[in-house]
Image (cartoon, rainbow, N blue to C red):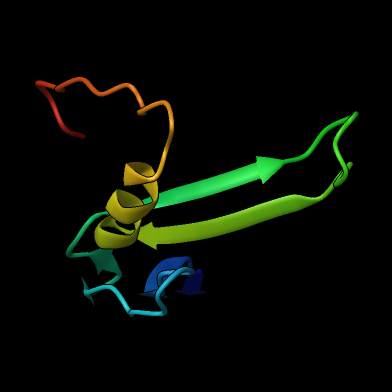
Length: 79
């Protein structure tokens, strides 16, 4: 969950564990997974938008429970 002030990040809180991620001067000092999805036709949530943030630890814990692992590759340039 992101809290913004004047368009800059004031705080990011992990939706799973509730931990506030480190930020400084409107920038995150650690990475997180940001998910935003609008459910479409044929779902039980037609037209509902969900937004959430997961800290890296919660992401790792959830991903470890997948029956089919997420694809993983290495990036050379990080923007």
